[in-house]
Image (cartoon, rainbow, N blue to C red; front, side, top):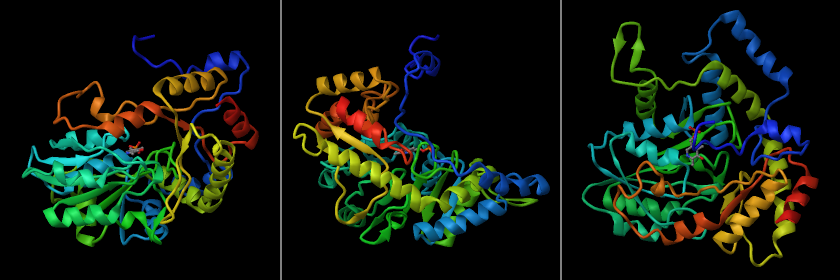
Length: 379
Ligand SMILES: *Cc1c(COP(=O)(O)O)cnc(C)c1O
């Protein structure tokens, strides 16, 4: 085994112990017959990718489901982020104000576009602290890239006002917020662009996959070119582009899973409420509560413990009993080994504090109530 590799997911060892392992998430899948029915026509047509029937159908269905005008499907959520930023054509070296309390993808997407992340602290609900954004704006700032962490929606109004005042673009990383509504509106509608991830571990999956929501046809065309080599016809390449298309097997999975979304969220809600019920009378544990303005998707169940030591103990105790909670998001992306101390340092007091105490508990549609009971008891 290579040094430094995470071996905590050694499933073999766990089967030997006959211990029931509960991972932090478990991909939702449609009944296998349903998927086979969907992919059968692909064997007849031999059309496996390149914006086939399912890709187009899923774009339509998702635009309706997410209540956005235009949506472009991508191979994964990360490429949705990268291409979103690229489509803005910011000058190299420009600064983007973002949060360090996120999955590393958000920060990498900025850097891989030749831009500089400026990290802003977060607030109680784990999203970017909008009151700290203005102080970070310089003449090089071009955009704000906030994340709807755990499905908690950022302060859309204030961020919009700041962006308007300083003429900045806003790209939301909505990877955690699939299907949510904020003040009755689909969250994909906010900002200049919003991106989703349909990775296997998310509330809604296309195995791997992602999407960019945009407001007009022109942007949609631009994103199309970016995800398909800029190819518009057999002899016409209009711009430089990558390959980030969603293929037909992914889209077929997406069409199947979309049919079951209501049930999926209802089941998650039951698990979520059961955890809340069991843990709410523990003053030393802070639970995440959704604001009244949100129609939530119950994607995650983060708890905030009293201290880093308590988090360490709780994590270890759960693991000992086969329960894989996640220190999500720890470390902060600003502290990732690959660029620690490389970018302008800003006090990230709350982000650091929360990253050291947060623990995300297992949550998925088919998690059994008895397991929730057991996890709560272990905590
Ligand atoms: C999952 C995730 C991504 C990346 O999505 P992939 O589909 O895995 O590429 C980006 N940002 C956040 C916050 C995520 O949780």
